[in-house]
Image 1: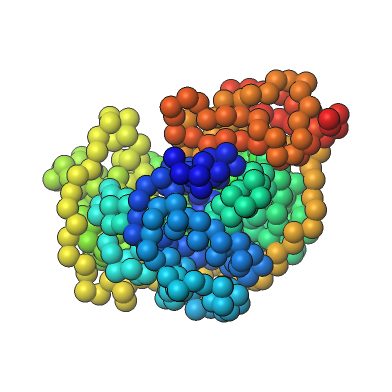
Image 2: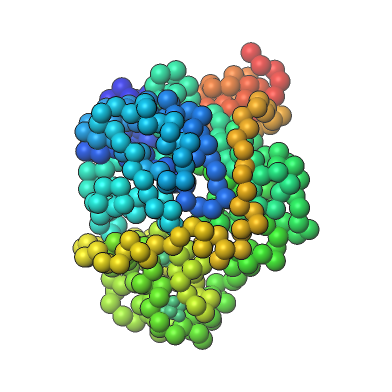
Length: 441
Ligand code: SF4
Ligand code: SF4
């Protein structure tokens, strides 16, 4: 393991863009190009675009370290043109082997398969990884965390996230990992609807939360508050049996979901219209068509944008994925030709915002990094891809902010966890470690 990767491992750096893949593993894999995904194309989320301005030097330093670790000859920072301040902040800092690539303001420019294609012209094969085309990708916050880990031995203990939607003052805050979502949401000045529901993540790919009495993690990029009657919440609440019933009753086989599927556009076999048809007729059709559901990015274009009759091919894909994963099935298929219209079929963000009925909430959410220290944090042992971390503290131990509290299991893929506040360990379970303030060493 190279020293940069080792430091990323020590600091518990994971992909902050959503999946939480352990960064040290990525930094041990050779790549020709290191790509910073600065697209942040989910409406209402304003984290990376603001951090990229404030911490431009750390971002470029993180890119430099990442390039060194993987042996990349070129570093690319992919931004949308509208992130003018971020572009202006990084441009003077770039080395001769780095450049900014301007992405179209479309969705899903931030899906890494699409970002890679737009920024490098390379196409990741279906069920493949960026490394298959010589590229490594991380988002802005991940590289900032890497620079802090390598140059200052700073572990990942905080998370920056946007609170938006039906709140009095949308805001982007930095809080200790493990802070209760309820406490973080309160920082946005109060909820403005009567029957609030909560989405973790963006309006397209976010997940509906059962409760906000749960902790934020290293991968929580935003929380959106919406009324229970909002169209997006209704979509989330639709039971699977209704999804299937609507698909059976109303699919016109118009093929729009396939024609607008970003993965299909870049040459993947994934064909949501055929998957819906197969599911409607008891899984008939080529086995690879159904298996290609495993390559769905869950970008929601098919359900939120393409389908004219309210069908959700994505939900059918998600159900199929769960079934296939249980069976241990894998998709194997070749990359096909690029759709000649691909560039023009991605969705303009302004139109997407209107379609999602979130225009009224598309406001600034200014970055507020004032000190915030909760009384209690709950650190989930699994907030990354791989095995749950193993606690190395016990109930009653006193810990300092930044101290290691859970280790990667031997020989496993995983990430370390560190105390995000100083205090006393109140509970250690199979699921989490809880720390309360007080009794510090
Ligand atoms: S969610 Fe729909 S549009 Fe997006 S990749 Fe999956 S099938 Fe394609
Ligand atoms: S867009 Fe809707 S109606 Fe058209 S093929 Fe896809 S699921 Fe069927």
